[in-house]
Length: 482
Image (cartoon, rainbow, N blue to C red; front, side, top):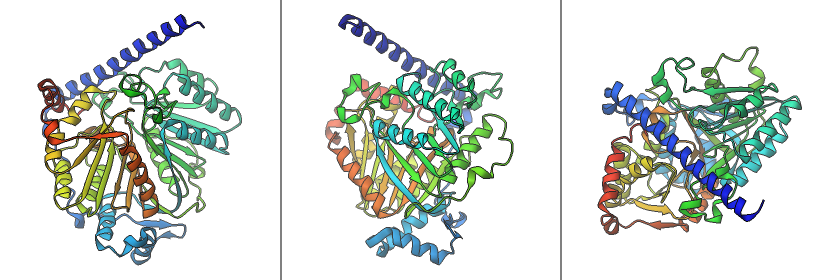
C-alpha cells in the first residue's frame, strides 16, 4: 500500500470513528430524553441514606477455613495494615467500608496491578491460553477492530481445544460491532449473549434499555479474575505513555487501570457473571457447582467484589462505599475518574474532607470521548476548587481509569465512574483491596500520573470562556442519565 492509499485509509477511519461517536452520543441523548419524559419522578430521585451504620449488616471476612469471628477478622485486617493498624481512624475507615459493602472480604488473594491496554490484554491473553476448564468474558465493548478480532480468534481456538467459553457483551457498548463478529463465535459453539438488546421484541420493557452492563470481567477456571476499566477495543492497542494528545487520543492509547486477581475472591466475580448471564437468557442448565470449586490461597490480599445492579434501585453499594471512605478519611483521598459527575452529597463529602485537612486530589480528563459527560463533569469544578479539593487534568492521553486510594489502607479499581449512571443505572463492579501493600502501589501509579497533568487554579478556572460555562450548565441538567 502506497502513502496516498495509507492517508486515504486513515481519513476514512477517522470519519467512521467520528460517525461512531456521534451515533453513541445520540443514543445516550435519546435514552436520557425518553426517561426524562416518561419518568419525571426520576429527576427528584435521591440515593438512599447511607450514614446510619447501625442499620447495616457488617460484611463478613472469609478465609479458607470459612467465615471468621470478629476478633479473628480484626487481627487479619490489622496484619494487612502494617504500621497503620495502630491508627484508630484507619480502623474506623475499614469498619465503615464493611458496613456498606454488601459483599464479603475474601482472604488469600494475589492482586496484580495492570496499567493500560498492552499490559492488561497481554495478561488476559496469557491466562486464556492456559485455561483448563472454562473462560467467561463480560464486557461493555467488544469492538470489531484488530484487537477484537484477535480476541475472537483466541476464544475460538480455546473452544476448539475443548474449553468452555462464554461471552456476554452489552448491546449499547457494542452497538457498532457487526452481528457477524458474534455469530462467527456462535457458529463454532461458543455461547454468546447480548445484554439488553436494542430491540422491542427482545427487550419488551423498553425502559430497561437504560440499564447497561458496564462491567469488564474475565474469569479463568474460577481461580483467576480480571476487572477494571479496559474494554476489548483498539483504543487499548498502545500505551498512554505514547502521549497521543487530544486528536489521536480519541481512539487510541487510552490511559486505564485493571487488576488481575488470583485466589478465592474469583468466585465472587464468577457469581456476578452468572447473575448477569441469567438475566440475558435462560439460566445455565445442569450442576453449576463445578464453576465454584474452592480456590487455593494465592497470596495475602483481602479483596471484596463490590457491585451494583441497575435493576435494583435500592442497591447502592458502590456509592455507599465511596461515600463512607470519603467521610472517614483522615489523611488522603486520591481519586482518578474518567466520567466525574457526582451528586451534591458526594461533592459535599469531598469538600468536608478537604476542610478537615485531608489531602483530596482528583485526576480527570482534559479531553474525552463524550462531550456531554465531560462538560457535565466540569460543572462541579468551581465548587470543589473553592472547597479545597485539588483537581488535575490528564493532558496527553484520554483518561478512562476509575481508581481510588484512601489513607494508604483502602484501594478501589473497577468499572464504576463517579456519576449517577454508574451508581444507579449500570451494572458495575469495583475490586476493593484492604491493605497498605497494594495501596502503596496504587499511590505510586497516581503520583506518576500526576506528572502527566496540569493542576487547575480557581482564579484561572473562573476566567474560562462564557460558552464553556453555558455548555457545562446545559450538560449538567442531564447528568442523572448520562
